[in-house]
Image 1 (cartoon, one colour):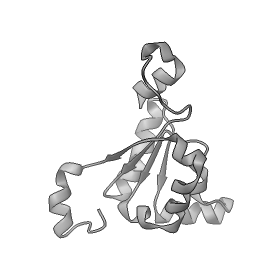
Image 2 (tube, one colour):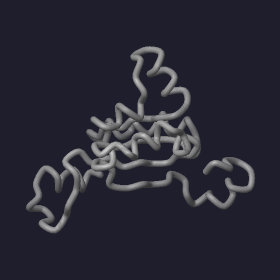
Image 3 (cartoon, helix red, strand yellow):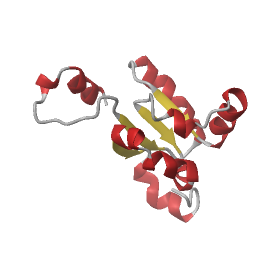
Length: 126
């Protein structure tokens, strides 16, 4: 994402690259702890990250009366979420939104090397 943001700021760095002006990467994380820790680490690098899970969604609804998937249309460079969130109606709405879809530039999976182990027992949604 740091490279993408550098190219967005200075297109001469890579003349053939076509990135959105407000790029965002969706990262699927296996645990809520990772979802909550990673934004702090990314902030230290100057990146904007948002964790979306059941807890953060409910908190945003209670405190600000906002759905976090709506918030994603405007800001973060990273959305850190769990696999179960990708099956929610709110995520589907975000994908159908042209502004959100236009910002999305990739998907990543944290701890993907453990996927075969998790499927059997730990995180069936993953």
